[in-house]
Image 1 (cartoon, rainbow, N blue to C red):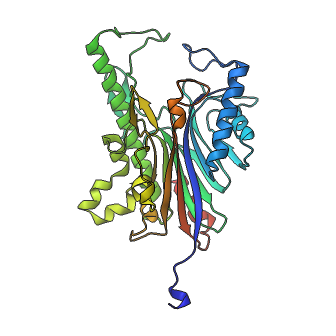
Image 2: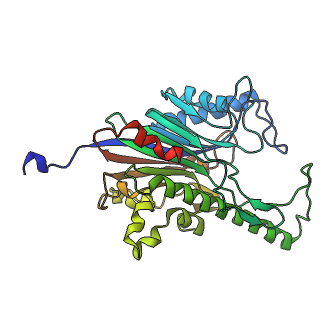
Amino acid sequence: MRSNDLPPPLATLMVATCNLLNLANPGRVFYENQDPYSTAEYERKITWLGERFRMLNADVLAVQEVWDDAAFKGAIGRSGMRYDFVAVPGAENDATHNGAQGTPRVGIATRLKVEASQSFTDFLPGFQVEVPGIGLHARFERPPLVATLRMKHGQTLNVLTAHLKSKRPKFLQDAQGNPAEDRDDRKVMALASLRSLIMRGAEAMALRCLVIDLMHHTNIPLVVLGDFNDTPDSVTTQLICATTEIAYDRSARDVALFNAYDLQGEAALKKDVAYSHIHQGAPYVLDQILVSEEFMATGRNSVGDVRRVDYFNDHLHEGRDRTRSDHGFVRALLRLQMQAPLPPTEAQQILSR
């Protein structure tokens, strides 16, 4: 084999998604019906998270359910790991901000160089969805975060962190937050569950629109990771991925996403421990890592692969404790070809559309 026939060398990238279960500063009320963390609880929580962050040893940490970025930074500090960029837009703690209000936010910590980052709050015009009893659902409850990152060998990629609406029934409330309908009525319960489904579906659709904008006619790899509050085969997840379109439209690969677990090269490591949440005794995969076709080893536009996907979920069997997390953490070892860096303007242009 001639030297110029050798495949290009690959650089590794470790990414992980972690739902941190209401990470907040001690003494601050995040939900009216929940007590704030005591100092002792807070210390246990950030110490536990720090230990997990150190174990994950990820180049990119995508996190959900953060109320205070100071608490996230505190957990990272306990890990002993160095992350030069840490951000939780909407949950800042500074002279003018007191953390997230109303709902927790998503964030990211990374060792890589950050070329650009942006939160997306509103759905595109014309893509709002009517929800019974509520009206137009026109924005994400927890805005997804997109970061354009550059690896040390020059590879550029986009990372999107998301947390979609939960399946918890969406009951109507008055202006003071009091129940506006009979929550014991099973028919009302059905309608409230439908509201949640519609809202999650609308957010999945809006996320799909964002994915299309990030991927269409570009060769910048994309990783989408977070808490989807639904399984890989669900309608909402498939709406985001749109992989079924490939069967009858070859060009659909350009804007399709693939579950990293299905692409991993080390098939022997696929076991029945691949779950990230337990609900009423049943295991589910709600926390997912999705990748663009650039990570398909046999793809037409492949520039890398998925080497391995790991699920860290032992703590789910240790009993419910809010100083830990009720979600398992998911980590993927990705690889990308070493190549010349893209001009900064090309790497950032998608965020300015």
